Image 1 (cartoon, rainbow, N blue to C red):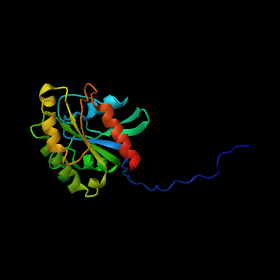
Image 2 (image 1 turned 30 degrees about the vertical axis):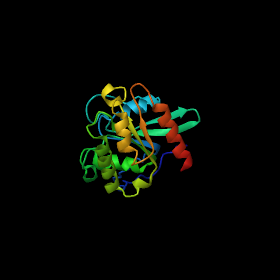
Image 3 (image 1 turned 90 degrees about the vertical axis):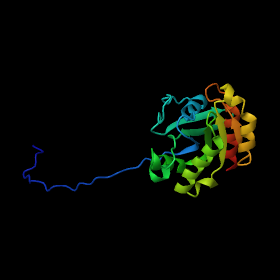
Image 4 (image 1 turned 180 degrees about the vertical axis):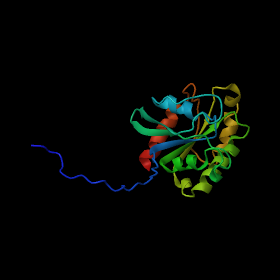
Length: 196
C-alpha cells in the first residue's frame, strides 16, 4: 500500500525573524591595558593559549582565553583587546572592550614599563573603565608593570613602586617575555579569587 498523501495543498508562507545573539564570555581574571602593554604575551606565558602577537596596536581584536594551571591555581585568564582614551565613547574597540571587563571576577591592570608615565596610564585606563561601568572599581585588582627585562625599565622599578604603591599594595614587576615575576603575579591572582 502507498504511503503517499491523497491530497496536497500549497502551504502558506511561514514566519521569519532575524535574531541577534550576543555571546557573553566569562573569565575569572581579565588582563586590561593599553595596546602593546604585553597582554597577549602574558596570556601565552601563563597558559597554553597562543594568541597572535605583533608589535603594532590592536593585534588582539577579539578577547583571547586561556586556562592557568599552576600549583593549586586553576582559573580562566582573558586577554582583553587594548584600550584607548575615549573607549567609553566608542573610540577604538570602545564598548566591545569594556563589555568584556564586566564578565570578569578580577582584573590585572598591565602597564607598559616603557611608558613615560605608567601612573598616568593607569589612571587613564581606570577612568575609561569607571565611566563606562561605575561598579567595576569594586572588582579586586592587581597592578603589574611589564617589560622589566629591558634595562631602562628595571632601573626605574624603585621609582615606580613609590608612585604606584599608594594606589594599591598589589603592585608586581614582571617580564611577560621571560616569565620573571609572573609566577608571583599568578599566585596573587589565585589568592584574590579564593578570597572573593
